[in-house]
Image 1: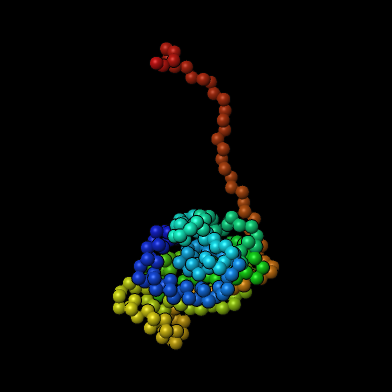
Image 2: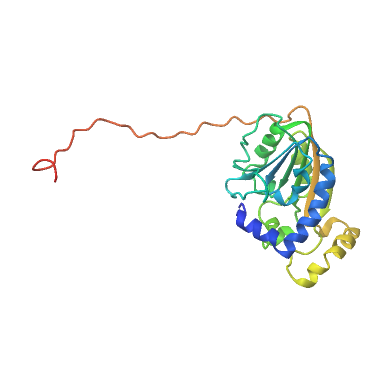
Length: 249
């Protein structure tokens, strides 16, 4: 199930969404590093985490899945949004230097095919950053946020998915220890949760933020797509009809 773009926008406008964006964006920006003169692609619904790249990057593109819907971004200037099939992106091979995928892998119709497509569009040594709901985390078990929809991943599952598709994991961080609740008291305690909860291990974390580097050779080749059969109606000549009593009117 893919969340609707209106639901995503509504979540990120909420108090809990503001906190989630602030907490996760800190890790995304740190992992992305210096993006000056680089080509940056945001995939899924990554716009809440991309503003840091707008000015220094050579180019910023935001691709949103057709099943999800798209919203224009940024608010100022020309829109960078493209509505497309994330398994067949309108990019040439090795087109981007940094990919930031949020609300992406957990909603992919075919996660393995998605990884092959990511490998194709990434330039050599490109950086891939994924934000994924953590299996057994509170955020993946509550469907009141977009992180509670789709297929969550454990650290081991995510490492295997990346490794088997020619991406080398460089670092992984846990985030969103705050319970996914809009209650004011919990929201006011967000900084305490993010500072104290990691001391007890990753068990309470809601998402995984992973950084990986593209390897030179693909571990798995792209699948050959079967051409779809489209039935075309046969147009056979028919005898012209004659209206009784001649032409009407």
